[in-house]
Every structure is written in structure tokens, then in C-alpha cells.
Length: 405
Image 1 (spheres, one colour):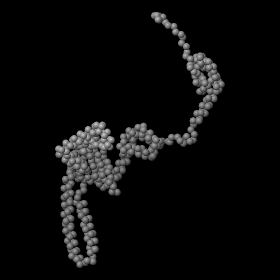
Image 2 (cartoon, one colour; image 1 turned 90 degrees about the vertical axis):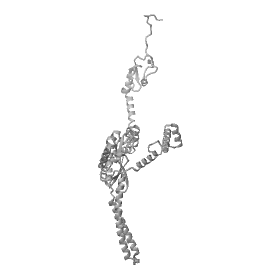
Image 3 (cartoon, one colour; image 1 turned 45 degrees about the horizontal axis):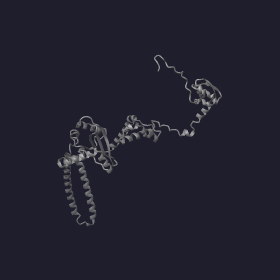
Image 4 (cartoon, one colour; image 1 turned 180 degrees about the horizontal axis):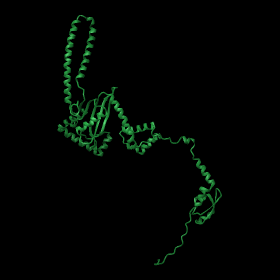
């Protein structure tokens, strides 16, 4: 035991002996026994330039500096070795291609193509900043300067919208009339939108359908607000004097938005349109009856005069055909002049049919109970993984319960 105040005597610490010679000393001739005396300085001779360098096993800085800077032979060989890494002519031509100028026509066309593809496919623009998409574009064409989401949103998209709108205005300017469809809907986040579609026939007699308006609708769904948005869209696209028919749903605010007070020339409902057309057709029928009676008198007189001229029967038939054709053309002109083809609001046929079916199903108690049970079964199927797996194996699908189904 060691008593209090008594210190244990230990041997003086000795420097540790390295297990092997430093790597840098392989370029020098020296006494190998110095490994046993690591802190003792010794002199070594360079194997390349035969110069002497002084140092120790523990401190090899002088040996390393000599090999890096002072040894002439080693320095020249290193320079030659580095010169061998210089690119030759073939490597020069195989270098990476130079990027396009950002203001060049090719660069701008490719930018428009990329962004328009995202817009037409309804893809989020954040994909532009993702690494896999950048790598894909650079693999296809290394000369293309990649488009960021910020550039696409602030510069490219506004330009594409401007060009598309100019083409749309040119198309609508050539058309004589247009039919508009207007609707409001709410997405899953309970945000309301208003959309306006336009149906026209271009000068080449091809039917065209375009989306004129699709924007956020804030506030109450008042008829005044709907009418104001509709009028602004018509003025913006130059359709104020070309409207033929407007199709909406059967909501009360749609009826109020397009009544005769809100827009002159519009009819509040389909019954008034039918009454107007019926009165116009009655006037046409009266005029046609009068014309037919007078034409019959003329024909009877002609038949009495030409009763004995059998040689000219074929000529009489051709004259009768031409006379009947002239009468038909006159009747069509009368119909066109009498019927007022001014702009009218009509209810959506599909929406009206859906309301009729819904009312019919609701009035039947037996059908209502059956539909309720079927809806519960369908909801159970969609919420149970076992049933979903069975349907996948059978390659069958069951539509979810919906108010329109």
C-alpha cells in the first residue's frame, strides 16, 4: 500500500519509437539505425540530385520541402507528367457545347415550348426546379439554358397569354355570331370560380370551342355581380354585338342576371322564346297561304289556256318546277325576316334533365330506399381494403356515391 504523503516513483517517459520509416525517406540514402533514435538529427543524401539534407525521423519537413521544390530532377519529371494531361485536338472538339444566348430565337422557342407543355398538361411549374427534370432537359440538349419557375411565371407565361389572346381575338373577329356557356362551381377547398365558354363557327365552317374566362369569383353569388362579369368579358373579346344564345343552369341568380331588364334583347325563360317564335311562324303561315292562293289562280288560268298544247308538256313541267322553287325561296326569306334571332338565355339541357330525374326518383319511396341502401354498400366497399383488393383482382370498379348518380 502507498501511505499518505508518499509518492510513487515512476521511470522517466521515453519517446516512442516509430514502427516504420517515413515514406519521404525512401528518396534518400541514410543510416537505417536512426529509427531507434527518432529525435536525433542526421544527414541524408538525395537519390536523385545527390544533395544532402538534414533532419530527423520525427521531423521530416526538410526532406519533404526538398522533394517538392529543390530537387531539380523530380520537379522536371513532375512538370512533364502534368503536361501529358493537356487536352489534344480531339479532346478539344469533344468538349461540352456552348450554351445558347438567352435572347436567341432558338432559346426563346424552346422556353415557350417547355412552359406551354406544362400549361396544356395542367402540370405544376414547381417541377421546373426539380433536379431530375433539369437533368432530363440537359441530357436532351446541353445547349439549352434551363428555365426556372420564377422566369416561367413572371416572363414566359404572360407572353404566351398575350399571344394566345391575340389569336383568339382574330378568330372571334371573323365570326358573325357566338354562343356562350356560363357556369359557377366550387372546388374542394370551397373556392368559387366562374367560367365562360364560347362556341363559334369560323369562315371555313369548322366548329370551334374556346375558353374565354375562368377566374376566381369572390363574394355572394348575386345576379348583378354575374351580369357585370359577363358584360366585361363580352366587351373584352368584342362579342357584345355577336351574341346569339347564352346557356346557363336553372339557378335563380342566372335567371335574374340575364332577364330583359339586365340586358336588352334577352329573354327570361324558354316559354317567352317559344311564344315569340310561334307568333312569328303564324304570321309567316298567313302570308304563305295568301301567296299560295294567288299562285293557284294563276296556275289554273295557265292550264285552261294550254289545255290543247300537248306537245309542250315537258316545258310546262320544268316551268312548274322552277316556279315552285321560287315560291320555296320566297317562303324561306319570309321566315328569316319574321323570326327574331336575337340573343336569348336558354337553360342547360343536361342540367334540366338531371333535375327531372332527381325529382322523379325523390317522389318514389321504394326507389329512394333502394338508392340509400346501394349508396351505403358502395361507401362500405370503398372504405374496406379487402373489398378493394377483390375488385382489383376481378378488374372491376364501382363508382362512388354522388348526388347526380
